[in-house]
Image 1 (tube, one colour):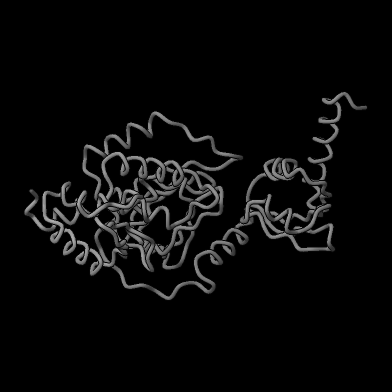
Image 2 (tube, one colour):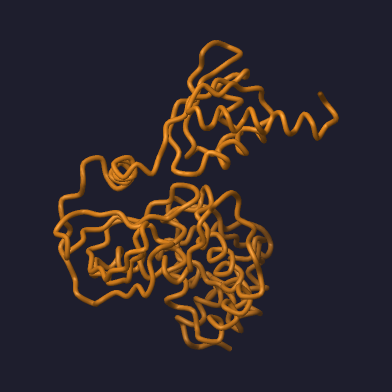
Length: 322
């Protein structure tokens, strides 16, 4: 019999998180208590915000259902390891749809993982490989979780940084946000050494550590972190403009393109145009366009026009065309 009420509540919650209806008698037997105690414990869980639904009947049943807010979850060892491995794999590459919220979740989970589970997570990850598309830059999940924790805790963050030209420096910052562009992670932070806001490619960061020194939030750049990053990339000329016309409705092209590439504008009911910028090489963008299974015409830049023409000729020869 479980006489420790907090421990019993956690055990009850763990049972209820299995997606099924639990008869009151079965729960009482599992916990080694009376049905009356089960009813009291159910009431306590409801007071804590867990939406437990009761059904009437000879035995009565209980089921955990969706509520208005997300209550804390109780995970067993296998579940915790599976979630941590999955989040680490996704966070290590700036995959579309894996954003700062995922990194924050990983930081919270790894903070409370027992050492034995942390070792299992590291072992599993080292034995697996994620196939990243294009020139997606790989980032150590530990780097992201350290940054996310520093952002959440408003702690100064220190790290080594390698610039585009290979110059190395040490930076002390007040981290503000992590931003994913779909292929890369960036940190937007106030650089204390430079006395101004800066953006940092996370794959060029090493040895990140939270210093423990707290800071008060500063006025953020106009438009927020994403807009500041967009303007910063444009200033450093890491992007180029492209203009493509598709022989398909805008909604069809939008479904097949990653959102971060841009949003096509309708020309008419059967065609659309995409004018945007890219911070990746032209050959990477050409591959994206060729795999959309939609006829298109590249208007600019000239480099992309020539690349598509060359590849088209090559593919035609490969297929036996003349």
